[in-house]
Image (cartoon, rainbow, N blue to C red; front, side):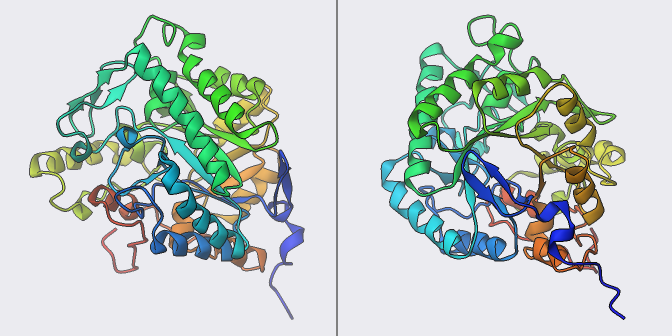
Length: 405
């Protein structure tokens, strides 16, 4: 007797969805995470191609890249992907051709690092952000952007989006989350301005509004433009604080085609958007012993708040829907079990399910679920994959069963 559950179409997870002409074969998305697999110039490498073709063959309906910088000065990490020069377009076109041949659909996430930049990348200058703010992860202070610099960055996003389309990507995502530049403008805790770019909720949203319009003009009305929203700096009982729910509805009114969101900034990542361990031991001499010991102390403080028990942004997703969000919503964060993913889609809590660390661990997880093997992901949220990015190493799963993590 066959005791395996039915395959494929019995699940809401494996129904297609169309977003502004882009047909996605199922609801599982390889969520964006910085890969650290680009050249020093920001171009794709063979390793990056392999990383995404493997995920495409593994069954994810949509693949989303992480952190592709719109300018050389806006890079947050060494070996971060970039789309800031026309000369990069042919190289990225070869990349998207490979992903498409493997059956995938892929989105490039365009971003600017803001106040969260690796210190090695800003030697001799300062990180730029909405306001002069301390970075409590790297222990430095950013510099306030001028009006002229802001206008320049807006144009850089538009130019980058045009290159994304020319390079054959299926959609572009404007990254306004995670504490990076646009998230810094959206948050009242990191945007202390009192001008046209800050002072109240509407003015804090102004830079995103201008960037969206520049991007939309660059790619046209029939090309999917997604956004990743910074919903808040902290996560308290499933709710963001401070909450940016109104920004989600403003994005919808502007014409954003689909929305992803996260809660948290670099300083709070292991108890917000990448809950789990804080494995400082994987970090090499890229940072000094003082900073390492500081991170260890912070990790001990965060530990009680960092357990991954269930999808930890579900409450916020429900609130977005309750407030009137009707565009497709991607829910990520702590999804490890088939039943949790299936329930979120079937109940209407979310339209798409994002997983990053589980797919880094097991690229064929979506196909395994589709074929009837619905055991939960073997990812244990040790975060060794993420913390090794500080060393500028390509992202990979470090976990083994005999690991101390």
